[in-house]
Image (cartoon, protein in one colour):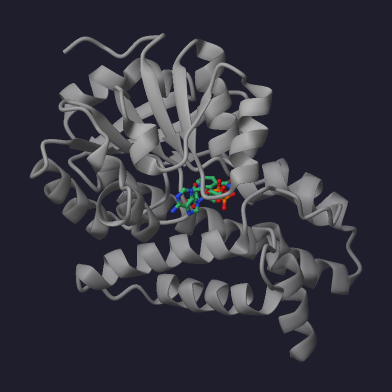
Length: 302
Ligand code: NAD
């Protein structure tokens, strides 16, 4: 099959924190875009910035005439509604042979089922979740973890290449989503460890900026210390662009995978409970780096 190079037509559903810059990269690379989001403002803002993109009123309308359809939605249940089960779902508008790429962080067990159900309708699915956050979505250097058939990946490689730098085929359907959830478990664990170390260190009289600098030149270095420490936590700007709610969802996904496989993972289960409680207490829309405020609150209860 010929690779989908510009000016192929891509339907893009979900123009939020990540979807907007990812779709912008596709427009910048010369792909024709048909965009949809339940937020009309998200659609009009995007089309205002990219006049060549076509605003559509449903997932079905976005899918019409598209060579591939990308979802960048909060979770896999919403993806399933938008693509297959809901009213005016994308599958009703897709041409035979079109591919669906779910780039959201969805539950891999649900993805395996979605892949089977779409295949029964003649549509192939790749899961292609991303890591790197808003900053790397803007500069097109995301890490993309792909699950599905190698031939399907080759077909959309130019599309993914406009958004990401590292594209890894992880295995069959669901493999990308499983690896993404496990990656975010590591990311969350590193962030909480840094926050707890900062809370203890500050109480001892250490300077938080000095602490982060020393972690970064020592064995405590992690993505949390390098990318989030000074910028979002020590500064208390808490503006990384990824919510506590989405991180808690990713941890529950990793926990669900372990439970599905009947594996006892006490630290993972503890992380699920910690982030789920933090999500409830920090309030709607809280950035995931505000987990530092949650750690401070727990410390005071001590
Ligand atoms: P977001 O909440 O900012 O964006 C989601 C968008 O989907 C919103 O614009 C919303 O209006 C739209 N939407 C919701 N339901 C819809 C529906 N039924 N049909 C059409 N549009 C709908 O979320 P985000 O931060 O962009 O994250 C999207 C996905 O990417 C999530 O799965 C998240 O876990 C993952 N992710 C986020 C980041 C990050 O740094 N923000 C990084 C990697 C992965």
